[in-house]
Length: 141
Image 1 (cartoon, helix red, strand yellow):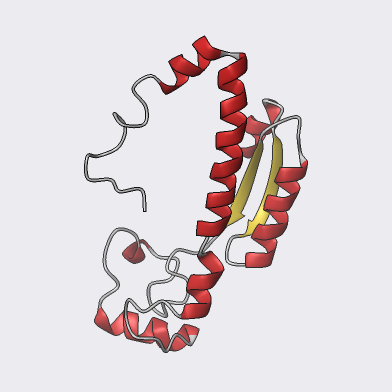
Image 2 (cartoon, one colour):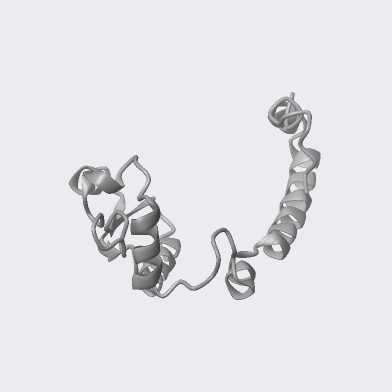
């Protein structure tokens, strides 16, 4: 598949270790530097990495690991937190609410200018959106 995208003129970043956060981050930074064409990032990963008996097997795809394999995996990767507990440092590292708020404010300013310059196109863009796209129970928080 990467050859197909390269033939289309895409930037293709090959053989990124999908388990290496820094390698993935480098690939994303490289992709963002490319301004003239889209990018395909090809990551290599192991399904159920860390699971002693089921890593990289079909048994890990679409079926639960089971209590024994989960306990062994947690020990193998050094995960000591209780099930469903996200440590504060992990939560903080993935919390993009402030970044999202800033991006939304920028978008709203840009779109307001667009509405002034292209009112018909802006009206078409917003026609029936977002109210028709979101469930009635969506609170936006």
